[in-house]
Length: 140
Image 1: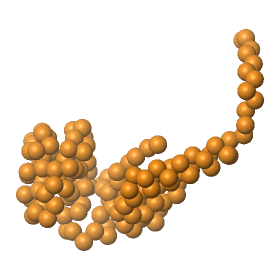
Image 2: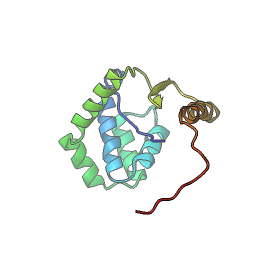
Image 3: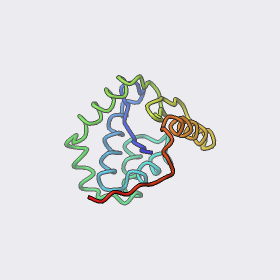
């Protein structure tokens, strides 16, 4: 199973959504995506400039590299492209996940996600033809 985090900012009401997405990608570049993510959400509701400053420090980011990437808007095009791809796939809210190409829209608890994945695995197992238990070996 693959998990990917994509940025969909075009329908977000926050004027700082794009910059927040760029900041998250910058943190990921330093191997600190989840640490930064957790720090930002721990400060939800604060003014964005304060959130980024406190979160980058708490996440242990290289502050100079972080600031340079945001000042240069290094990941702006990536954020825009991710948003366009998401919209093309019909994503119009968060969270939206895909399991075997099927969208799962909205937050789900772990038991529900386990059931969705199990159902997909069951269908996949049925689709694979049964292989004879007899194994033959050939020499080349």
